[in-house]
Image (cartoon, rainbow, N blue to C red; front, side, top):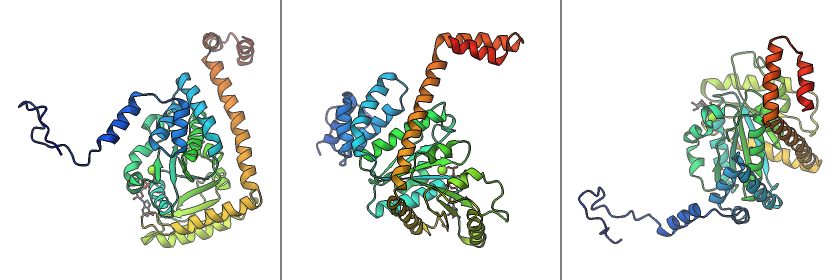
Length: 358
Ligand SMILES: Nc1nc2c(ncn2[C@@H]2O[C@H](COP(=O)(O)OP(=O)(O)OP(=O)(O)O)[C@@H](O)[C@H]2O)c(=O)[nH]1
Ligand SMILES: [Mg+2]
């Protein structure tokens, strides 16, 4: 490679350092060009459909933006991508902090890409507006997957409402599918309402659990168990293995007490060690069985249709709410009515009637 003769000043720090051999000038130019020119929605969509990750990331950024102009562009991109979406398995993964979600996704995702799958990992994290997206820190725990050309990891979008975050994630799913990702993993922390939101956007819901000492069913939210298509007891290794096996028996017994699922699927309980990458294959087999069974009995498609209807109504509700509370007249009236309530000069119902009448 030619010596850098341009800057021979003694002040130039890199004197004598030749340009890196691995620097590909063409690709640098391409990246620079892309940054300079803002591609149209159509160009972005075409790029995504060809599997261009840079365009995919850009489009997701538009989806996540709160700028109305970006929103319009994002909607056009999604419209173009929709015919190419839907051809995937969407898997939700939840579990309390520390249960091993990131470690599991690293092991599971790597296994999938080894088997020729293209995996996108997204997150719905209700706390991400505070922590700026925990999956970012997580990337250190997903070392292999981050580098894997067949994997795409996107941190949780920030947002003030779970509804907003969920909408962004749903649209991101569509974009990822259009880009050719056939397995979508959506991670969420098992606190708050985020599991419900994730459950309403996936085909298969996986609950990661730890074997505790003794009473396994204590402190578990009933709703989460009901949502689970499979309970995976993680950290089934070393001294923990015995407790994990016991927990499996208990969960199996407990699951039989729940009413049958609309999918016709009997939830499974299985052991795994994400750290030692044991039991991962079996989980993929379970998911395949589920997909096969529910496609056969038409639940798979029916469920996705139901989810679409749900999100249509949810989106209208969100929009009405944000339009309403964002209106300056309403904001003012709300403030003054709140003061009146505090001073005992009106009732909440009268105040609400008044504000709604505006
Ligand atoms: N022994 C053992 N340790 C594990 C296993 N899986 C994860 N761990 C450890 O458990 C700790 C937490 O794992 P993470 O993957 O960060 O858990 P997480 O659920 O993503 O946690 P948050 O991101 O905080 O919600 C780490 O120290 C892991 O090394 C396992 O199968 N066996
Ligand atoms: Mg994590």
